[in-house]
Each structure stands twice: as structure tokens, then as C-alpha cells.
Image (cartoon, rainbow, N blue to C red; front, side, top):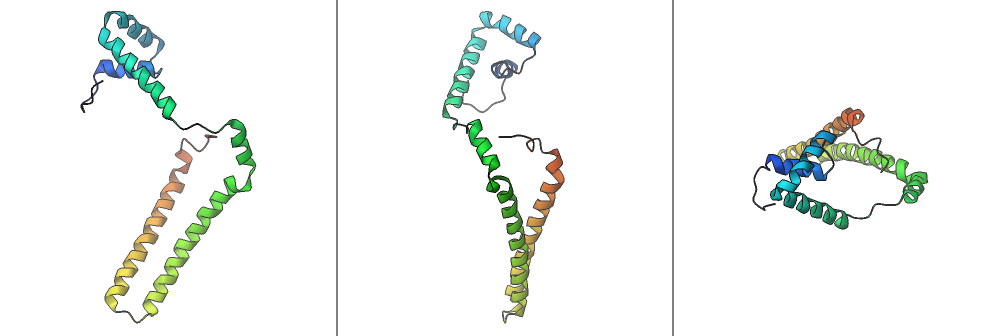
Length: 148
């Protein structure tokens, strides 16, 4: 494979799908029938297999099943993260409201008050729209059922 940035050819895409095990049985048989006659494809498959092996070697080790089960039993694993997010939400909204009120009680000029008010409003708006988007898309998240 070259280091130049270009679109992969159809054969390169087929080789990637072959190495990843993504070809149907018929497509796999057809591709394997081509390998003895086309050295480029053979070389491409060999390089992709080397790359896959290298990627597996440098990937960090995954926790063992017993470690996941131990974590699931801990209170902090599930409830702690939810409680933490809830506290952050309360802190952002409450802190912003407090700062907003204190800012307008202060003796600062109108310019700084407006700028800080805009900043606090933007932070709250960004937080709320992100939270709303996350809650709306949660039912469609394919990873909610993934154990690890």
C-alpha cells in the first residue's frame, strides 16, 4: 500500500474486506480464486494481514471478564457516574444562575455585565442543548447494550 493520499481501488477495498472477513461466501471464493494469478492482490492481502497483526499487538489489553463482573457489583461503577453527571448539571446551572445574579448586583459597568451574561447564557445553552441531544438520541445508541 502506498503512503499517497488517494481513493483505494476496487481491488484494494476487496482485499480489506477479505482480511476483515466481511465478504460473502461467494465473493470470498471468487477473491481467493484470483489470488494465485494476481501477485498484486497477494501482496496487498499479505500487507493488510501484517497490519492487522501489528494493530492487535499495540492495542491495550482488555480487562478480563472477572474484572468487569467485579466492577458491575460496585456502587460507583453505575450509580456513581450518573450521580456525578447529575451533580455537574446542578453545579453548572446553579452556579451560572448565582453568578448571573451576583453580576447584576455588582457595581461593574454595563459592558462587562452584558459580556459575562452572554458568556453564562452561552454556557448554559450549550450544556442544555447537548444534554437534550444526548437524551433524545439515547434510545438509538447502539452501544447502550454493550457490556464492555
